[in-house]
Image (cartoon, rainbow, N blue to C red; front, side):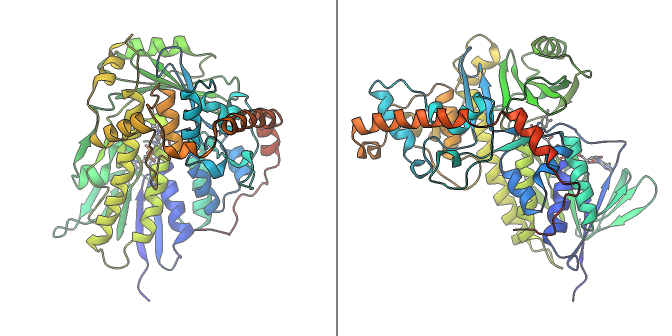
Length: 508
Ligand code: FAD
């Protein structure tokens, strides 16, 4: 049997430990050895508190006990994101994790709803989303497994403490055989002929050799950028924010949703955790300076701050390729899209899981690399378009950033989607982020009402449709009222958590 592949991961943030967990959980020990190098002195970026429902699949597949993870990371439940003042000042909508209407009608429901609205119906699309109604009422329980029930039509994610999540994964990855080396990389040694990375030299003088390297070094991108010189694709003409101020404050209401409020030159997040509230202002330095942004953020907080605001600088975009030579970049080292839809941890998950089937054996084949890069590109571009949509479809004329965004040219791939929806409420369905209910929520939430709907919608007579919509709205209202309050759910569920977390079962 051939020698196991020696995989070296540089970086121990969320990306490094998620990648390590995926590798040690799904590749037999005889086939690869995983060593992770990180520097406590450099630390991790420490933000990244809101997630998407896919993280539950990741955690489940690696055998994480959910209640224990939630207790360890001070997590709360997230049913979606509330956007305040985004479409127009004073407007509010929720992008929920779930469909509108019954599960078996998901592909046609919004056309039927639209037909009713165009004939004078007054209900909003949110009235038919179980997730939105539960979020608005601050209630939560697990979705029903039986897909014929309206309580099955949603999913959920978490808000958690990013530093605690990395620590949680580290403990599990080490139990499964990953080894960790503390130290700062001083030099990266490459093969003089192939350019492949051969080793990392630490400040202590220790040299760490590897066959394959995973760059999880965060914004530094020490391997992919600084060593291999992979270029950067700049998307800042569409996603103009380039700074964030992050500040924790005392906790208050445990809403089961993230709140994103549009501001003078960007937007502000509010993420409730069990022990504190995470806040931040993502802004563009072209439209506001740091002092003014700090003032605006601090003035807007509902509770007392627990630390000084911390400034982070970035640019929207991605590395031209994520995999070059014998190195794959995962996490911030591969690109950055602002946290408006909490997509970075999802991208880490996709990157780590996509690597598994394409991981080279003893021989690096460029076809594996090219396929990996193609798949990751697609994910990035679709998410990019979805984020741009929020900015493009705004009707605010009270601040320069919003006027700029409403006027800007957007990628053709996005213009096409907007025009198809405007014309006939058509939304393309594809594998990956985001699914039609997400696009629908943002289109409608930002004020784009379609001019027409599919003839599909007319398969139900009007009087039947009216009665059906009335009944559905009442059913959702009734059932949501019976759910436990979110704070009570968290307290009960976390109290039930077992002391030990990991099951030996992995499911992929
Ligand atoms: P980091 O956490 O920065 O880790 C880098 C690692 O590399 C560290 O361990 C460091 O020690 C190590 N390292 C670097 N250089 C060296 C060296 N020379 N030697 C040794 N070790 C080294 N994502 C979401 O999904 N949801 C959110 O709500 C969200 N909010 C965000 C808000 C902001 C303002 C920002 C900037 C990002 C946000 N993200 C969010 C993104 C999320 O924070 C990151 O995707 C996630 O934390 C992963 O970071 P990382 O592991 O790639 O990098």
